[in-house]
Length: 251
Image 1 (tube, rainbow, N blue to C red):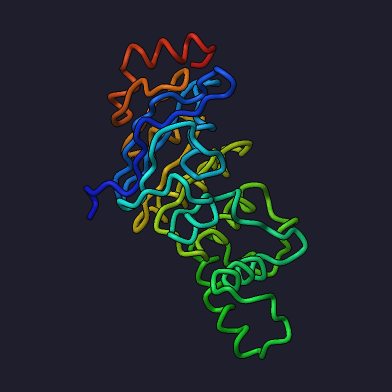
Image 2: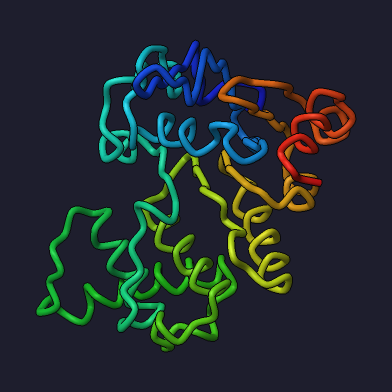
């Protein structure tokens, strides 16, 4: 199972009035891996990610998920297939507790409306599952804390818990470490590693030390094209990659 391709892009291209933000990108994400998409500013990472998660439509090219063509599907439809983009799809309600936030995500997955008048027995079934998800992301002791009172890193962990409530087979993480203090970076890195045990993860990430420690495969983009691909040891020594980062003012 681990060597099969779960998500693939073929000649993926996005043109904006003559400017190619992404051009002829070929990408294969293998089942069970953590795959990172990196590159200097302006490389096309965000556009590529938006194409893969169907927040943008490609000018040309093809996207397949588990062998099925999803190029023309909506982001909501691919989420139902088990391909979920975290931090965009998951919504955290600031004035609800961590437990209530996860419970709402579980209700939404089942297609239930917010039936607050339902019997306590039914709601407690959600509570048990919600508590298990909070434990998975290290938030057990914060279940009664309002989301607005959580630290930035713990809010991100709660967002991951609400995403996991949708039971995704593949998670797409858009800069999960952005704006975090080092303590939170370490916590969320460990969390991503833990939840990757039975899932595939594709992430865009600027923090190269995180990429080095977590990723099985790294695809480097520059000027909208794939520049290099491989594990961190391979891509970090690639002259073209070094030149691209130095040329863009990155170390």
